[in-house]
Image (cartoon, rainbow, N blue to C red; front, side, top):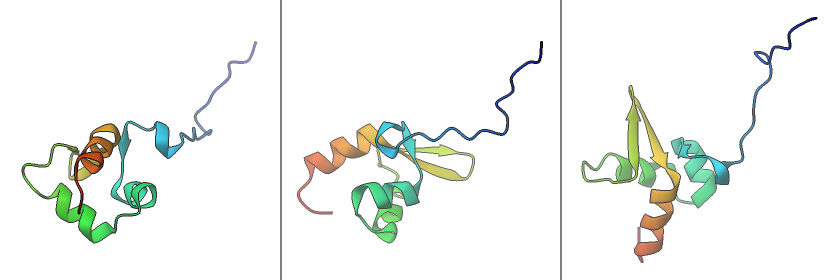
Length: 73
């Protein structure tokens, strides 16, 4: 019996279901500009960013909470 392999299949997860977002995904998701998002994630006190190597990813739920708690960006 032949084993099934899934190496060549790419699993697509909708943005609203992802745990972590790239900057570009977050731009599309939130409507906030890339420059402003980079400014936010580069703040040492930013609570919704996680760094994986040199890449900064945005914790979607924490980001949503942050956006819900402010009136201006």
